[in-house]
Image (cartoon, rainbow, N blue to C red; front, side, top):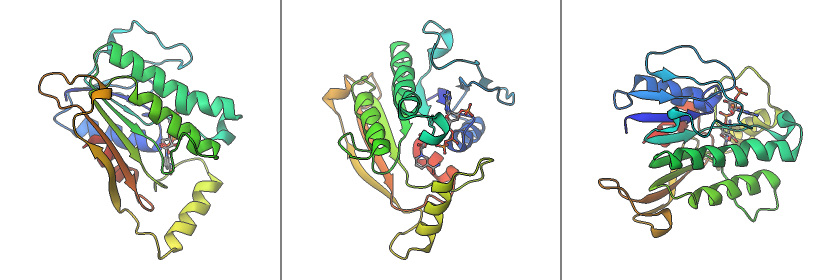
Amino acid sequence: MTTLMLVGATGLVGGAVLRQAQGDVRVTRIVAPTRRQLPPHPKLENPLVDFEHLPADAPWWAVDGVVCTLGTTIRKAGSQEAFRRVDHDYPLAVARLARQHGARAFALNSATGADPHSRFFYNRVKGEVEEALRGVGFPSLSIVRPALIGGDRDEFRPAEFVGHRQLNGSKRVRPSEIVRSETSGPTSHLGPAPEGLSSRLAIISSNGVCRSAEKVCNLIMN
Ligand SMILES: NC(=O)c1ccc[n+]([C@@H]2O[C@H](COP(=O)([O-])OP(=O)(O)OC[C@H]3O[C@@H](n4cnc5c(N)ncnc54)[C@H](OP(=O)(O)O)[C@@H]3O)[C@@H](O)[C@H]2O)c1
């Protein structure tokens, strides 16, 4: 992979992916559409966009692969509908446009418990976006399902704080243990693989706390 699109680059996980991609010799160019300017970097193209009105014809959609770490909380978004726009509709819109412009691989930072049939709204939305992405036709689709992710953020999120306290205090969870829960080889529903790239779906989960965004980032990038 030489050119990478990253959506969510201003966030906790996206920031870790951005740092890793900037230092990775295999990545020659990074396109990171954001709504807030990122610090400049020689490899970085940083179009400022409104995700409600993505420019479908922009030349920068033409990348080899996409990493999506977009996301919000219902509290921050203001409503379930607004949350769904960010965690479901925007990733799907990005996926479709990038695929139309030739992207062959897509990696989504999803969440543990993602399930389109869940009775919990958050898990249901995560499951629905995973399911919808399977239908976009990427030859390679990676879905990472971390539990809580450690790292510094400016904003205080009570649910994350309580979750970290609980998980860190529990003897039953094994922090940072990574479980490759579902992988499959050639998958016809993902469409034909381009020459030299095998068609695959990988779902990767973490059992407990992922102590750092960097760890999640390694899962996404590899
Ligand atoms: N953190 C965890 O413990 C954890 C655990 C499991 C799964 N996840 C999932 O992992 C993903 C990333 O998590 P994170 O902790 O890195 O999130 P984060 O720090 O809140 O970053 C979210 C990213 O999404 C962007 N975004 C949010 N609302 C937007 C909007 N309306 N328009 C455009 N961009 C918007 C943010 O841009 P701005 O900077 O412009 O707001 C930021 O780049 C999320 O989907 C989350 O559900 C997180």
